[in-house]
Image 1 (cartoon, rainbow, N blue to C red):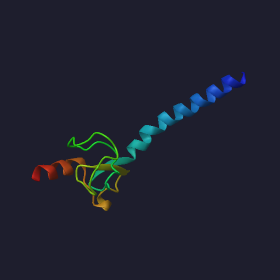
Image 2: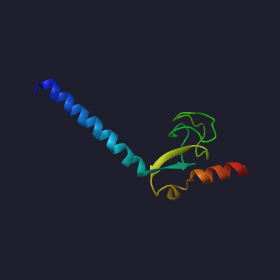
Image 3: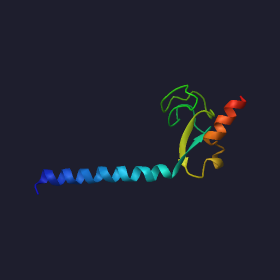
Image 4: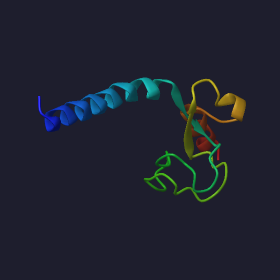
Amino acid sequence: MNQRAMIAAAAASLISLSFAAAPAAAAEKEKCFGIAKAGQNDCASHVGTHSCAGQSKVDHDKTEWKYVAKGTCKQMKGLTMDEAKAFMKKS
């Protein structure tokens, strides 16, 4: 096996391992609403005010979320998606 083939095989192995690890990492995380600082949200607002990470305008907005380790959201005084949606209906 020549050197290029060995490098390509090693790269393919690393890439396939990273794809296999991604679902496991996601399973260990949960969305936690109301804990993100301004500009530090992980993705789109659940009410559609923006569609990307890092676009929150205020600290602890109940429509913004961050991924946290599963089981730690309540310790951080955060909300689940259902709780955040219920909070928005009340407002």
